[in-house]
Image 1 (tube, rainbow, N blue to C red):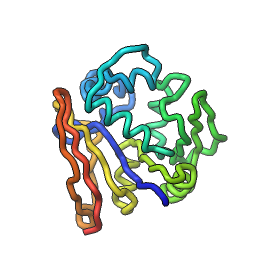
Image 2: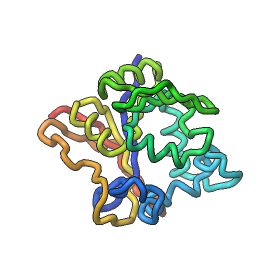
Image 3: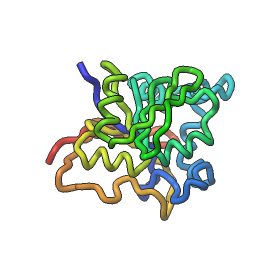
Length: 206
């Protein structure tokens, strides 16, 4: 049976998931947004940052998200930013399909991550990701524009938001331009930790 299509992001209290400029991707605001992730044992192990780290519900959620994902889809902006920041052994360990106009051969990284570059739209990228994922789920990794394209196309089954206690004021707003007339949400989980509040939603057609 085919898995689900989902996204999972950290979001500021005023609705932003990234700074406006890619050059600020690792800047102060973004680091504050992701502050809940960095101490977690699973995150540290996956990026080979050394032993130790926190365990608890935040750590469990990171691990569960990784384990359910059989393939990922992302936009070119996220790929370009991540390619500068990810270690040589990129943290996906599954196939990743990059939606882009650029034609290039697959880019294989150590540890099981291969980036495939798809030139004919989000639908074909998702078809390829579903095939690669088998009975596991497909994660739309980002960025915000790519997530919104999948939401507005009715291709997202569910999503998770880690709501961080930080304000951006400007940047990439997650739901800017959403087709709200066709989308209804059902909340399926809400839980908090000292650093962040996790909320999960199933997506229904309105």
